[in-house]
Length: 187
Image: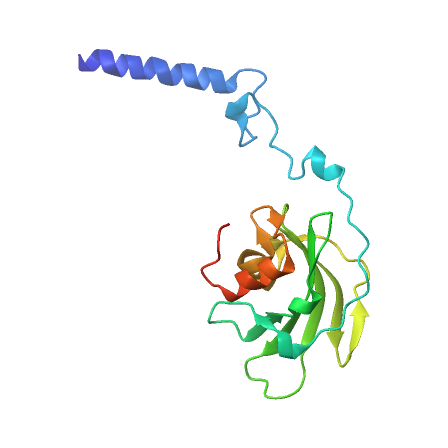
C-alpha cells in the first residue's frame, strides 16, 4: 500500500511540474496560479476619474487649540492638529494644519504643516510648511502613501480621527470627538 501511495504522489508532482512549465503561465509573476493574470493595479479605473479640488491657502492656526496625536513613546516629537483648520471636501479629502514640537523644546521654535489625507487611498499630501513665522509653499505637492513616509504622524492622524475606513468622517466635530477618545467609536 505504501508503494501505491508513493506512486500516486510522484504522478501528482509530475503533473504539477508539467502544468507549471506549460505555455501561457508566467511563473515569474507571483500571481501565476491565477491563470497568468497580471497583478492587480494599485490604482483602480475609478481613481483615474477622481480630481482633487484646489487647495486654498494655508489657514491660520492656534497652538492653544491643538488636539494631540497619540504617537509611540520612542518618538522625540509631539504632534497636534488644530481643529479650527480641519476641512472635509466634497472630493473625499480632509485638510488640516498639524504642529510638530520637540519634547525637549521649552519655548520657541515650532514647525507646522498644511496637509491633506485621502482616506480612500491611504495617502497624504503636504501643501506648505510653517517655520520662523511664515508659510513656505511646497513646490510640487504630491500624494504619498502612508507606507512611503519617514514620519508616521499622518497615518496616526488618519487612524485616530480623520478617516472612518476608506472615507473621511462625516464632520469636523466627529473627527475631534474621535481624536479625544482613544477607544475610537466605530459608528
